[in-house]
Length: 376
Ligand SMILES: Nc1ncnc2c1ncn2[C@@H]1O[C@H](COP(=O)(O)OP(=O)(O)O)[C@@H](O)[C@H]1O
Ligand SMILES: [Mg+2]
Image (cartoon, rainbow, N blue to C red; front, side):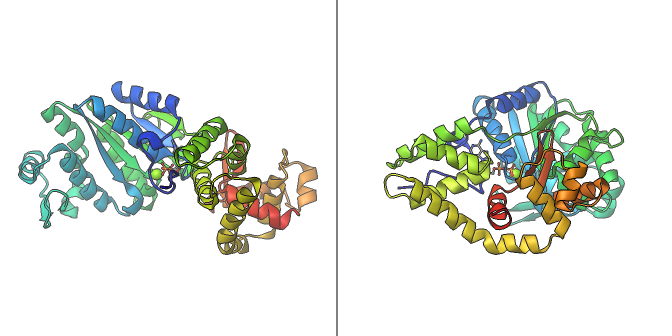
């Protein structure tokens, strides 16, 4: 039987669950020409959400096009412009000749250079003279709106892993350029999303930053356990296996409703189940998963200081007042200023996440492993 669980890839179609309110919000923003910023830690479902909405809208409306650019592999401003222009031309014009001709129309100050591979429909790229673009990036940054106007369409430009612009030489000058052009666009709309909550929040919620008030900022949450229980039990059923609701609920609870990890553990349990999942199969699957990660987790802990480890212990014990004198003493955390430094470095190491809901481990498996080592 085919594995019904997906992790580590964007989920779409019927594999995508819940997020009705978020889908609606994003769709409303798009139809009202409001830009959207989506923020959550890695693997909570940002890319999947945007893709799902794109699929839904494109099905009913041929006048809207989506341009996806993942900044994960883009390390310089120059690469960004090349990729941006290429993707926009690619999604807007299907034939190679059209792309070349339109480039001539749109780029008058800049000199685009094309590289065309064997399969010209996919294997095509464009580059510019960096000295030219550095002076006037206007024609590239305005390209979405120019294409929209010419073709009487709307384009949603989706920039994934947006926080990666931090790697560029001068991120703040680059942000200013983007903002200065995009704020005048009427038919192109932007969706910028990324992980590293702290950085993303800085970019969009800090008054002194160029992207302040650029659009609707959406903090994506995890998916609630009731949806996971339905999802897990029905996926087992579809593939002629059985799991009861209480074990399904246990999976969601142990993985703290984290979309990626719920799916990963569900897969392990599913693969380890012959016909009907019992508590024994569940325990084995979880233990196997933890064992697979042990070396990684050990390495992670080796890179921590004692106060950092102590802070995580306090977190495991759900201590509410982490900076209270009593806590500082009991866990050997030093001063409360010290606690702030500990938090910051654990955030930078992507071990914890601080949100309005409180502080939590980013990786629920690491939390389980850490508790089993340090708390027993
Ligand atoms: N709506 C959803 N329904 C089911 N699984 C999901 C959903 N959103 C995310 N996931 C799970 O989380 C994983 C990571 O999702 P992804 O969209 O890549 O997150 P992000 O872009 O935030 O890093 C997916 O591979 C899938 O296992
Ligand atoms: Mg993503």
